[in-house]
Amino acid sequence: MRRIVITGLGAITPLGAGVKTIWKRLLESGSGIVSTTSRGADFAALPSQVAGLVPHGSRDDGKWQAKDWLPASDERQMALFAQYAIASAHEALLDAEWQPTSQADLEATGVTIGSGIGNLDEAYNTSVAFSQGGYRKVSPLFVPRLLINLAAGHVSIRYGFKGPNHAATTACTTGVHAIGDASRLIAFGDADVMVAGGAESCIHPLAIAGFARARSLATAWNDDPPASSRPFDEDRAGFVIGEGAGIMVLEELEHAKARNARIYAEVKGYGLSSDAYHMTAPRQDGEGAFLAMRHALRHAKAKPADVDYINAHATSTILGDAAENRAITRLLLGAEGKEKASQINVSSTKGAIGHLLGAAGAVEALFTTLAIHDNVLPPTLNLDNAAPGFDCNYVSGTAQKHQVDLALSNSFGFGGTNASLCLAAFR
Image 1 (cartoon, one colour):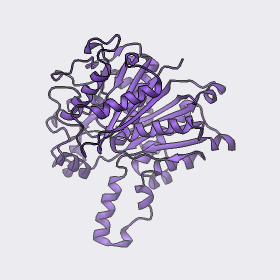
Image 2: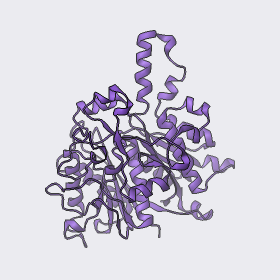
Image 3: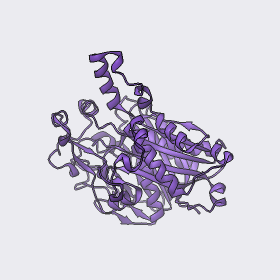
Image 4: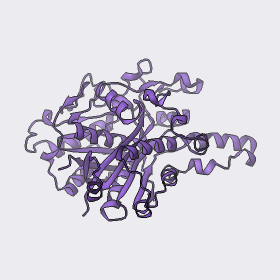
């Protein structure tokens, strides 16, 4: 089986635009979670008034404005989630120094980018316009701006990539599924290089209302937004919705070595499972999460004792964090070198950026890659009092230096879908 390595990274998140800015702010325990009330009365009337919003401003300041990344014609044609995707892909390709021009290289390069919800604004606004004004109020760009696979499509079109053109949409597991699927396309010879990840931008009153009605969102911290996302904490009470994109350039090892590419880490394993239990709630025993991690380690030919760090899905919900914690301790506790839960290193970067839904897994896999590359554990913010039964090292508040040779990055979604990536230092 062909080996797959990571050679390029790109991201837009609530911590900023560009990987260097984002990673620096994350390790400095910065937060990208802010109040939504300034966006209008519709937001101010909702029970949850916080979100992880991409900061607006100049690219030179590590912030986002579309004109710094896209020509005006492209901006008009693309939904915001696709704009985030193409900007992050551009950064990742520059980082990888992969700008192919030959027919063979273009045919060997593909794209897999997914989204969980995509362009909710477009669906809502067009529905209202159609209801009020009929057929002529529907833009000819309505469908292209709505389709989730257009993020991958736009990247393929811009760069002329003629390899696989694919999109995953599996709720909050989308980003990990996109990267894992892309790694298998390389492993089985369908491509030598894949641009892979997830993108999301649905900070809309309707989305917040829907999640709030499902009692999924944090509502008790509207007056202190940075404190609202509280993974593993005793006072956690729901997730904080976020937006952004994370993109990786994945590459077959010999292809990367032949062009002397920098290698951040290796994709060693990819595990998938289903809870087969409930539409939105995880099994309390965390069996689905456990199976996904176990499968990822099996593919990697690694043992639980080999795991140095887990970037948890942990969204700050009562049930979800507890189920994943049970799965992690079931998998690792008792393994050689992990006789005590405090020897298991776990963090949730959602404390800093919120839950990016379909982009979450890709952004968090990117953070896990950098944890391996830089030998540092990114922090979990707002973990003031770990809930009973939460006894691992959750890297509370401040990043920790630690040798990371092998790590897992988890994502789970509505419908009981679970995935875990096993990433490792390249040897």
